[in-house]
Length: 254
Image (cartoon, rainbow, N blue to C red; front, side):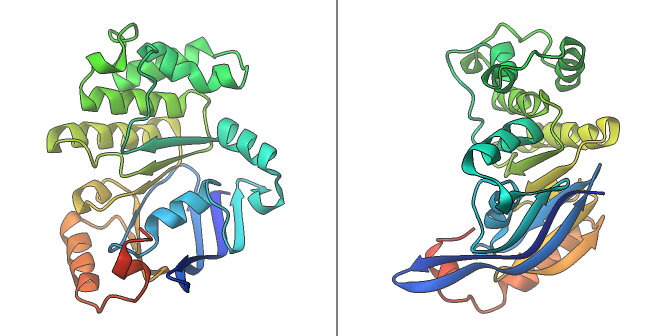
């Protein structure tokens, strides 16, 4: 069963009064317990796809399912509850609360949901992210890599069905990025989580089971376990194509 499925996904923006198709009828499935990277040139629609699949942005047309629940049928309140209970998010900006400790940041989504934390599960998560000796620290006392580990632990706290990551290593140095990617890989392999990650980095994408490549709002490649060199070559090929008007010209769509 798919953790996430999108069908006929279309997203149209207006740019200088003209319609710009950020997504143009995308169909994709993300199987449970897999790690998928989404890539593409600037303006290809990769972040738009992530946001629509995660319920952060409603598509102009098309349908999205998280498990067996179709998002278009949900009210805003129910959609908010679904994102809180069944989806985890990790972004390039760590989005931690500076006034809270590491532990308080990790359990914050559960507190907001008025749910009782599963202490055994949280202990496993904290052990995996390697923050056992940092729980009483505040984010300002942590390195960038440690802050991203907190964000990953927070995403895992409610045992979500899928974790969406938007450029999670974009602000990290090479060594720290590798540690974070290894952690995400371990989340899939050891806990059976589903991870969907947008990245511009072929090396980061090579950690995934599968790489979807977008161009002009459409999937143009679906590559199982490609190496970084093959990914880079495919992106370079797409980069030599003439840029489309609208989004690729003005940066309105990523």
